[in-house]
Length: 232
Image 1: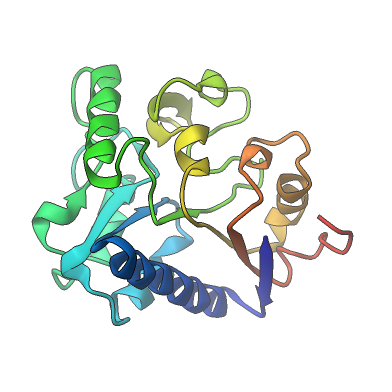
Image 2: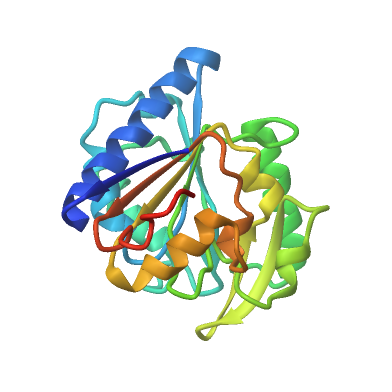
C-alpha cells in the first residue's frame, strides 16, 4: 500500500487522474485494452475532468461502474450522469466501450446478473479491472457497500443490489470483484473522513476495511489522513 497526501482536493484530483491514466496505459500495453471502474459521489468529478485531458488511448479503454444509484437515466442522482458530464463530455470514449449499470431495468436482480456477465466479457473470468477507483464515506462505506447491509456478506456474485441508502437502492460491485482488480485507488478528501480512513486502513469495523491492502494507492488530503499517524 502507498499513501500520498496533498494540501487540497484539487491536488488530490489531479494526482488521482495521473495514477489512473498510468494504469490505463499499462493495461493497454499489457493486453491491448484497459478497463477502468469508477465510483460515484461528488468527489470524483474534478478528477474525471482532469483524466479526460490526459493522453490515454480512449479507443482502447472500457469504462465500467463500481456502483450506481437506482434512478432514471440522466437523473442528477445517477453516478453515470456525473461520468457522462465530465470524463465523457467531449465524446472521449467510443460508445461500445461504455458500460453503465442497468439500474432502470424492472428486475434489478436480473440486471445485476446481466452486468456481472458484461464485466466478464470486458474483464475476463473472473472480472479483473485494471483500476477500481473508490471513495469513502464518513460512515466507512465504499462503493455501495453500506454498514449493516446484507450485500456486505455476498461472496458468490460479482455484482449485487444494496440499499436503500440515502433514499436510493443501489447496484454495486461486491468485495470479490473490487479485490480482484490489478490496482485499487482511493480518492479521499475532507476532515470528516479522517476517522473512517484510519479504520479502513487498519481493518477495523467499517465496510471499507474489507478492501485488500496490496496493490493499493491512497490519495488523500492532509486533513483526511490526519489520523494516520500510527502505522496502518
